[in-house]
Image (cartoon, rainbow, N blue to C red):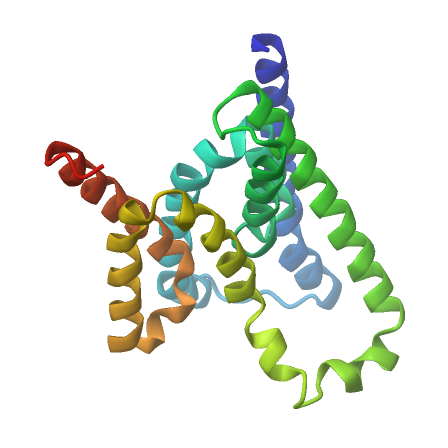
Length: 217
């Protein structure tokens, strides 16, 4: 297992940095093609507005998701993207069905397989979607289906929540009540899932510690 983890870590770093270079080369290629280069001050001004948020979320997601997904799953998920909506639910659901726990050797293998399968399926669906986009566009843009697409993420995590909350509802109450109150008071935070997931984790850990000390759990 140690050899596997070392090899996975080595190849994971290669793919991560390859993805970084590819992403950065997209705007460079556009500038080269059109021979139009933005001023450095304009680029820095734009980055100052968004970079701190993305860097913060990036660091938080690594700390939050790595224990859940394992080494291979983490590298694969971060290269292919869409962790919160697809990769994390896929891995957690697969481990739940296989009756293994995150952080174990079995969990590492199941998580990696689940995320790889999710990535392949997502790529195939996107490829098919692009090929028949003109046919699907009127259907996807239909006002009738819009509420369904707006609730895909809550539906994914709602299904997972039922499983995990039922296992120990006492530990789930503190972060659940906090998040419900927070979203009711500040609805605009609904788009800040990347930052709020670790907040919920911290609240759950603190509540668990307090309840353990008092003999509640």
